[in-house]
Length: 129
Ligand SMILES: [Zn+2]
Image 1 (cartoon, rainbow, N blue to C red):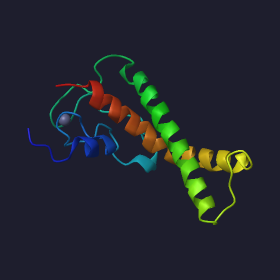
Image 2: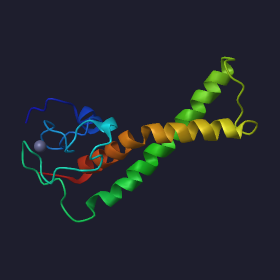
Image 3: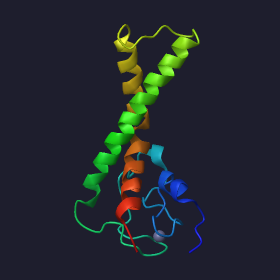
C-alpha cells in the first residue's frame, strides 16, 4: 500500500496507522481544544477499528511519560546552552526555580499536542488492520 506520509509523519500528525490518510481524531486541529481527546471509533477512510478494546489508550500514558521526560531534558539542555552563550545565568543547582518555571510552562503549552501524539504512537504500535 502506498502511503501519502511516512510512518513518523503519520504519528506526528495523528493519521490512521493503517492508511495514513485521515486523522484519528474527530477534530484534527489540536489547539482549538474542541474535542481534544475525541477519536473516531474506526478510520473514516479504511474502516480500521481504532479502539480495539475498552481502555485501550490507557497505555498511552507510558508514551506520554516518556515524551514528558524528553521535554524536560530538552528544557534543561536549552537552558544550559543559553547559559553557555551568556544570554542567561543558569545552573541546575543554583537556579532551580528557573528550570521548574520554564519546564512547567513548556509542559502546559505542549500538553495538548503531547496528549494526542502519545495516543497516536500507541495506536501505531498496536493497531493493525
Ligand atoms: Zn485508515
